[in-house]
Image (cartoon, rainbow, N blue to C red; front, side, top):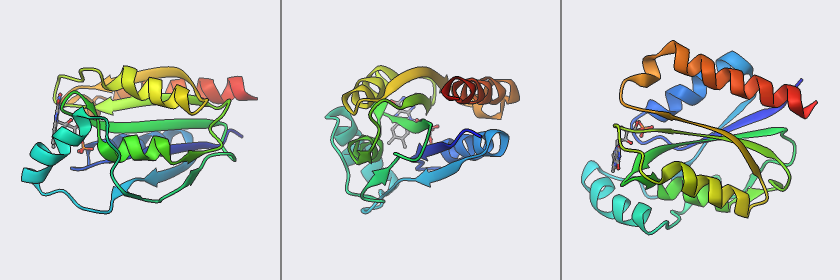
Length: 163
Ligand SMILES: Cc1cc2nc3c(=O)[nH]c(=O)nc-3n(C[C@H](O)[C@H](O)[C@H](O)COP(=O)(O)O)c2cc1C
């Protein structure tokens, strides 16, 4: 049985919904990343977007994310200012034991993901993980069962390859 963890940040619940549906379909553990300092809508669009653009890390809970017991890491981020959120930057920096692990990346956005996926890929590779697949959900597509099924299939295939 493959052991998979879904590490995600979600400001308004959309990315969480994808992670939870994946877990329902494939099993595993969800690790929700929460910034210590909660953003208001105003501060998300000003400070949050600036920090996302600069690829900064927010202080987060949990502080350390030990993935050494997992076969597959799935990272989910909302897109902020065409990049990953500062909470997800911090989560990747906080990974322990990611060396040699397979990873999948997904992002949810309003329609303009920008550089989110390549930058998350680069950060994960910096931690020694191997990104083997990715998916972007545009506005409304999280309700598209086929897109969720596609990503769930990628999770299962990665698990079979890990055996
Ligand atoms: C501060 C902020 C910045 C955003 N920037 C972008 C963007 O650059 N491109 C885009 O397509 N969507 C952008 N969005 C929309 C979100 O990426 C989208 O609604 C996402 O699915 C939200 O996920 P969540 O509910 O898990 O937080 C932004 C939303 C917020 C709150």
